[in-house]
Amino acid sequence: MIRLLNAESFTLQQFKDEENPPYVIISHRWAEDPSQEVVYDDMAQPPELRSFRLESKPTSASKITQACQKVLEHTNGEIKHLWLDTVCIKQDNPMELSTAINSMYRLYEEAKVCFAYLSDFPSTEVQTLGQSDWFNRGWTLQELIAPREVQFFDRDWRLLGNRWDLRKELTSRTNIDEKYLIDSMFINFASVSKRIFDVNMPLLYGEGKKRAFRRLQEEIMKHSDDQTLFVWRSEDLASEGVAIYVRLHDVPIDRMDEFIGKIVGTHVGALACEDDRGRGMGVHLQHLVGDQYQRVKTNEILDLSEIEGVTDADLEYLQKNLCVLEPR
Image (cartoon, rainbow, N blue to C red):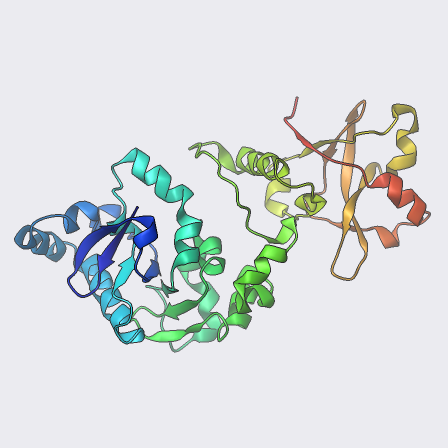
């Protein structure tokens, strides 16, 4: 079941999944004061009361009416429906809200096109696109990657361009490879370290980025043994003392030193993956106890070809399965 806004009649309509009409999905930032956003309850009122409520929230109401106009204009009337989270989700219904959050990627993936509305950005300075607050939201990544097409609009709803037109600015701001912006289908063939994951995780408010990141890794490992999962850099996580605890499996404890190379007081764990140039990658580890190590120097990824004395035969031993453990 999906709820869509009819751009012609300005009314909400519900459809069964198999009967979904083509729709445009709107990516935007909520108002600083959420109470100033037009929401489902406002749109579901009888016409006269609905008009009164919209008049009391002029900025949000204008965003919605302009979005409707652009949908009809840019699709030549072929698409008459749009999806906008503020009005298409009953925000006060926990079950509906949770279902919508877990279905968000699919909603964007199935849309004919995504309109990204940058309410704080003037169209005269495209080279500074990355300064828009639109990029600072938690939903930006999937809303940028999931749709088959994304068109960007400035604060006055003037078209800035699509992902192809703005690929250099988008790559500069997000570090997403251009090929994934050119055709989002490429993301299906990307390594774990570069892709969006088809996993669902319950929201735990207040858990913080450290625990959330650990939970994400644990969930991914249930579905994939791709060790690029550990190929990430973060000054931020390192500064907070985040350590991903890893255990090397199937390595005899009395031969551990053969499989872990010693580097300046820490160890290097070789991963069963290569970079874009075919070079082996590794991460810094610090020994805890027995066969347990923790990730340290998290802002660095090692090039194994630059480590003296490590042969190809050594790397076969080094590349063992890793798993994330809770700290003790």
